[in-house]
Image (cartoon, rainbow, N blue to C red):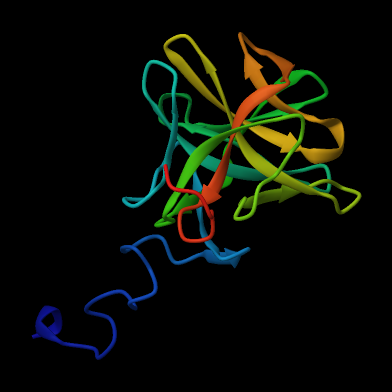
Length: 176
């Protein structure tokens, strides 16, 4: 008797959530960021890079900033850069269900449709970048006034003048 009771509204998750267990969602700049931790990746997470395994577009709070980074499931963290070193954040947000793509850009230029992925502690926007290094595709952060994309390579933060930026497929005015 006890196990057969039905409670209205508890048989399935509300429609705005991707699946059970991912109830903390934040809509920001037209994108849905889902709270996750310890390497967990929601089912509709956006793959952004590749470093021997797929990496996902993520972001994490760090010293009054929200910093774009990459979720690496095997490291059980979102990896962000801070003062030229790698920081593993075990509590983070993952970009989910967003229709976007990476397009080539240089020198801090952010085309129409660029997705803001974070904010500096002084309130300036940061965008999602991608650096291609041979077989590796490393997600990083773009700070437009620095005219570059910062990405973690071999445990150290490096700046790149040529990179890709993540844009909304619906808002970016040029075909692929």
